[in-house]
Image (cartoon, rainbow, N blue to C red; front, side):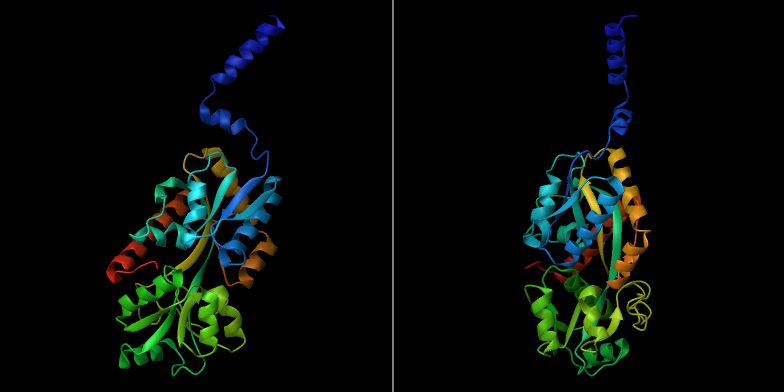
Amino acid sequence: MTKTLTAALLLVSALLLPAGQASAQATYPTKTVTLVVPYPAGGTQDIMGRMMAEVLTAELKQPFIVENRAGAGGTIGSGVVARAAADGYTLLISGIGSNSIIHGFNNPKPTYTEDDFVHVVQWASGPIVLVVHPSFPASNFKEFIDYVKKNPGKLHYGQIPGSSGHLATEYLKQVANLDIVGVPYKGSAPAMIDLLGNQIPMLITNNDTALPYVKSGKLKALAVTSATRNPAFPDVPTVVESGYPNFTANAWWGLSAPKGTPADIVEKLQKAIQHGLTTPHVKAKLEEFGFVASGSDSAKFTKFVHDEVATWKRVIDAGNLKSE
């Protein structure tokens, strides 16, 4: 058999391979991968993204870099990834706001749908925390509920429209039948400044935002919204154990890719993140912020996101809520 004929037969054999098998033989990644964070630098989602980039760079031996594409409640950056080539080189740091809450609002509607992504792996989650100024006349969640019910319409809270804290507060209002009034803020930083200055009495916010102020005694934490107590707030009860068994709300973060990304690439990314989450320094870093490592695979993460979209849509519809 001539060399030419042999080469031709090898080429035909390669072309006849099933698409999935041929794809699996390709080496991924072979160049820099971009992780789009749809929020500004310095925020929680950015921190999570940079941790994931570090893990993936170490695990897959190619640079994974973070690109912040902020704006419109996370929809600009998320839309960029939804429209990107499904080749594994443009990925999204997904989260509760841009990939679940946003789909419940009618105006504005994002330029992408829940089905425009393959949800690769869940990275971590953390409770949302009810914090009050130290002068607030309640030392625990039960006293807080009693106080609010005795003073309907008089309590104000810091409201960042469309945020996880906003939706968790509105969810609590619905579940516990509370009458409290939101004071809109453009972000958690100005709301926290006013809470520390006792300009507003309460705020429900992500645990990493609240944690340093609770540790220093500048704020009181009355409840966490996770199903079980959080290690960062071991003495703070959950809303569930305080008498509201149907109430849970967690901030979460994960890695998502454009729809159509090959299954072998999804699996490779998933395994890399899952392995990275077992390393001591990653676990320690997450614990420092009060987050819990997840590592849920693509199937579980996809179902989780679907359930989250449905949950927050019900809350938004019941409260006739607006994102702005």
